[in-house]
Image (cartoon, rainbow over all chains, first blue to last red):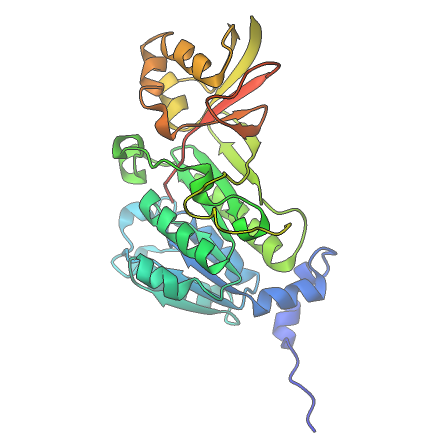
Amino acid sequence: MTAPAPLYSDDELQRYARHIVLREIGGPGQARLKRANVLVIGAGGLGAPVLMYLAAAGVGRITVVDDDMVSVSNLQRQVIHAQDRIGMPKVESARIAVAGINPFVTLTPVAERLDAARAAVLVPGRDLVIDATDDLQTRHMLNAACVAAGVPLLSGAISQWEGQMTLYDPARSAPCLACLFPVIPPAELLPTCAAAGVMGALPGIVGSMMAAEAIKELTGAGRSLRGRLVIQDVLWGENREIAVSRRDGCPVCGHIHGTAA
Amino acid sequence: MQSIDILYFAWLRERIDQPRERIETAAATVADLVAELAARDARHAAAFADPTAIRVALDQSLADFAAPLTGVREVAFFPPMTGG
């Protein structure tokens, strides 16, 4: 009989010491992070802090999907990328950055545009999916895949000086994206970061909040964002929390019988 | 008449060029209030030109445009954001 291998090496125990002393995380919470399996869609502005903080926190398995390449105009805010990686696939640049932060996490890069067929393969079995994409069609498609698989979807979005964030999870009584935003507005009302601009630190603020919510969700710490939409307006210093609920007859999640969160 | 704080987010705030305003209104429902706001000036008209995707929260709780404003102190209008 040999003793089972310890969960952590000495390096990892030191690395995660500031988490392990937190009452809300502790050794059991840190072990949950190590065993966690998370899918992140988008390695851009929001994906950058999400990936860096989840990797630093020791989330064991992270898959990141993005078909874009690093460009010089990304570097004003997408701090996971670097000058010497311009032209490289963003997921590969992210893999290099994450390997430099924490060699004990496994980051799987998927250099593809997410479509419904790939989502149906990539989403099931995850502990959490994180939406850091930049278009509403992809967001709704990802939402449908998460509803179908019963996987909670932590979603953040930004524009110019503002961000929105919530946790969609109809299987646990929170709304899905189609409950909250059933109508996709016309394209002229949805300027991209390229057309409308975005203040560089904004994705750092919103993406770091998303990383914190992900760590809470994976460890069971605190109060989750289920049923709560947070809006941050950095320009005017307004922030609001809005109570949101499932919508009767939602075509995406209406058939799901949720349990208490 | 009642006094209500109106909050605008995302493209609404950009078009109206202010994050909030306090108004006196006799509007009975959110839809009435939207019609009243849209008639104020060109900026408000542009903001509410296509309200189909706009969501509303009454006193920080999601509602719909048919909801009554009786006793409501704060109305927040917010559209979906998409950037990442």
